[in-house]
Image: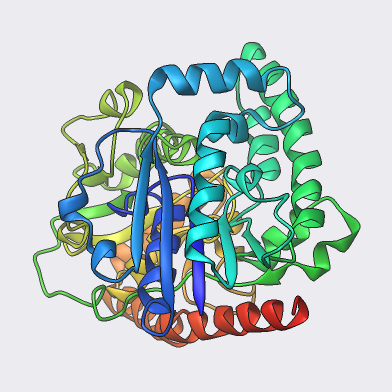
Length: 393
């Protein structure tokens, strides 16, 4: 099978959830199929010589988006009825280039990641198309509206309305649609949402596995540190949870790590809190942690950071919102909290009882290994590809 794989960001390095998803889908699909990866690059930091995807794809093409081009895209987008984050990545010149590359490659299928890149291919009728929503952008915007100032409320409200409309347009224009979790599927606001198929993320358990090491940090949180849900969670840890926790554990040590920490994140650093930026191998941080803490208040989809912690046998404490993306309510594979005091209580349970902490870590480890294997998940995705092609022949 020849697959034209379109992404709004280069899926390497793996510093964001959508990039991780694309990277591993390509890695496993390329074992049996020809992949042409066409990606946009907004940061101009992509280094082709360091990209392992070039070794497994038939062809990789990266088109840079200049800051001027992005500004013009947004300006035009103000007067179009599409989400600004779709306009951000859209260029008529790039659309022509994609059309030309598709004509030359002659794929059996077009696979498009996120509604941000859907505008480039949604009107193509001659080739079967699949959209990966990944998560529900409109729901993420709705949650952010409730937690921001008046200026951003106005901007995000407009963007939310556009995203709601566009998510349905994309559903109608593509032959098949997928999303990460049933919770995300349920958050879609159109009648046919039940037809959107579930393809979860997986975990590379050969890479993420238990590593014996000195656990010098009591708590660890990771993620892209300019992504609003991760910024929000980091602030919640330091400003809401820690003051209460330090009453019981004065010498508590916290590590917050991830790509691109902004000034707000850097200002959280103290004797108690260590802030680290991007590291090539995030396992270096995981292996130093006693507990993985992910108090996500906003955001959608499956949190890959939790799967990584679970397969490294680190007990996890997270929110009800985040747990829903991984496991049904009956499974006791992680501890759940929603208020600052609840987080403190759950953390203290783990810190005060090593046997209990080990039991939770073991349950999480087994669950992640059983339910989130990339090879099995990719085989399910392949079946969707095959059936979509058959329906369109």
